[in-house]
Length: 256
Ligand SMILES: NC(=O)c1ccc[n+]([C@@H]2O[C@H](COP(=O)([O-])OP(=O)(O)OC[C@H]3O[C@@H](n4cnc5c(N)ncnc54)[C@H](O)[C@@H]3O)[C@@H](O)[C@H]2O)c1
Image (cartoon, rainbow, N blue to C red; front, side, top):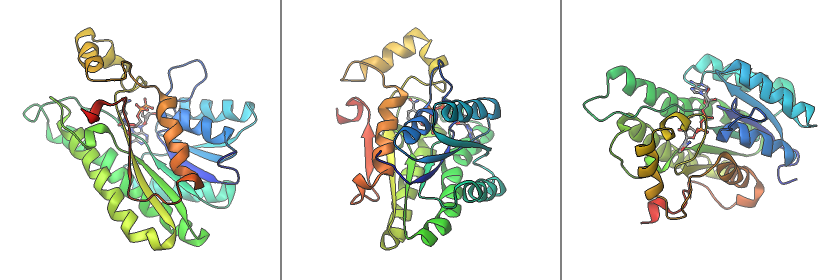
């Protein structure tokens, strides 16, 4: 029970439906509940979000779903208010929602650029902005931002994604410095190539998948639980001396 007594809000947490391929947010929501936390799942995918929360409750966990578009400030205000209404406080925020856009610089449209910056950079900023006042009331908290190895190194495409994940990485350090004295820790996670609903279509492309596998020294792509374990650690008091840190979970990809 590493998260006993904690209340968490996780964005992009709809992909936790039993028997289906899971994403980081859905897997983390399930793991958080197993570790004793109460969890609010936020996502634009209402059907899967509701179903995931329902299944967690049926398994004996304590979870509710709220519709949350992370690019909307009013949605964040409502999601934080819903968390306080349901559970009375907020200890942990996981900024996890995301999308992909595998385009070169020349292929990237203004809309694609704005979409990536909005969901990954602005979304992370807005969630953090509205979680912090509740954490200050509580005397502390932990914010976990899901960046990427693509926030650290480049690749042949995904231009706007790289820029947005780099923004999330450095935003993490800015917020960490501002609130360290208030006992609010802010850390980023940098997952490598993982099989989730977000990536499954591109992994069906044999050439692309072979290119990915070649880049992973451990010899396999990751799964949602590989990352959820890291999220639990950064959410828990086990990481109480960590803030502004980058937790890379990538099978060695960026070590070479
Ligand atoms: N899968 C990987 O290989 C990988 C690697 C590095 C980083 N990441 C990042 O990890 C995070 C989770 O990815 P995943 O692969 O587990 O994905 P996933 O398949 O769980 O999909 C992400 C979730 O975010 C939701 N979402 C999208 N836009 C949203 C919005 N505007 N507001 C609220 N929710 C929204 C989706 O509905 C979906 O449930 C993302 O930020 C992604 O960029 C993924």
